[in-house]
Amino acid sequence: MTVSYPPTHQSVVPAADRTVDPARWPDVAHPPRTSALRTAIARRIVERAFTRVPLRIRHGGDGRPASLVPLRTGALPTLTLHRPEAFHRRIGAGGLIGFGESYMAGEWESDDLVGALTVLASHVDELVPAPLRRLRGAWVRRRPEQQRNTPEGARDNIQSHYDLSNELFSLFLDPSMSYSSAVFAAFPASPATFTAAQHRKIDRLLDLAEVGPGTRLLEIGTGWGELALRAAARGAEVLTVTLSEEQADLARTRIAAAGLSDRVTVELRDYRHVEGSFDAVVSVEMIEAVGAEYWPAYFAALRGLLAPGGRVALQAITMPHERMLVTARTHTWISKYIFPGGLIPSREAIARESAAAGLRIVEDAGFGDHYAETLRLWREEFGRQAAAVDALGFDVVFRRMWELYLAYSEAGFRSRYLDVRQILLTADHTPETAR
Image 1 (cartoon, rainbow, N blue to C red):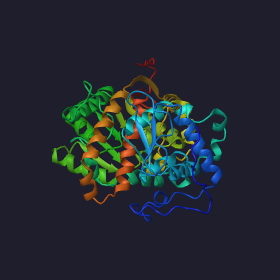
Image 2: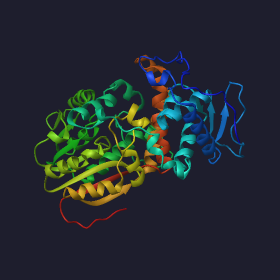
Image 3: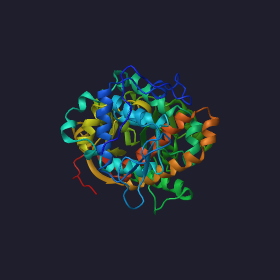
Image 4: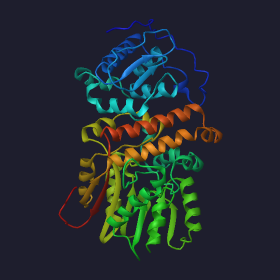
């Protein structure tokens, strides 16, 4: 099937969307300059992909045909293209970065955003013809040099996300202020059980690390302090480090309010600069911010900080190894707008890098469906808090960006493209087991 569009010329750039501040969002306000050929190729690839997946594709309000693909029976997610020419121009110029920026600009939407993205994630290897995948290097961008996780770069990368506003995160996180996957007792999950599920996740990690009275515990990645609070309540002596000033400030406030300042020290410190010897090291979804270049340094730090007989308990998001290798070389929409410098590891990468540092995986349990539920609760609450987000000074483009981020992440787990795992490592020779 073919659909006719007006010709695209390199010299023609549509005017900025008046709802988008071009000073704040320069790459969203204006569809990029690109050649007619690249746009035409992108359009053909997109149209071909859409005919092969269970989606309904519609044009909205521009006089175009009612649909790009035959309507299938049953309830399917609908993706509506409000400005199809701009949509294809962005994809032609920037691939999936353009896909995300087009959503931020309001050029497309869906009646079931998670459902549509889950379909695309489930068919990710089928969307582009195999011969064209070999030309991927001509289409995608390399990660910017300034996003490398040097000590200075890591601080900037972390602060660009986690120092947005404590008030923003408090609008959609549960009262424990936990920003990682919960472990639910039953599905479907509900807001009423959310904090208990977050505590269940924390307690499982502390149990893996055998944290109890007198344990010298290091936490890499403080968050807003809930794990440190629960560890201190067990009688542990806790050092927790972070690069986020906003998180450190609120964590200290919460720890003081709980009367546990004598057991918990919060430091603004890079994991590479921590000194000491610890019975247990715990790190929750922090390895994703380390970057592949620095995984050897990260695992070497874990090993070097571990006292004899000590245990390391990690919670880590993972992706298939081949997809990780592709993503590692690519500047993505997530790395541009959400987590600069971030990279989700594979299980193989974790096993290889930890072994090279002298650590052995002795337990490894996955629970990706729990992360999908966690993200659903966050996403739904974020949507309910739109007016409060606006009141904090975040504009509609920011809200659409976070809607897409939360839905995109949820879709990753629902499609099983992503997983999350709790991993126990030791420096001894305990036989490896996995569940």
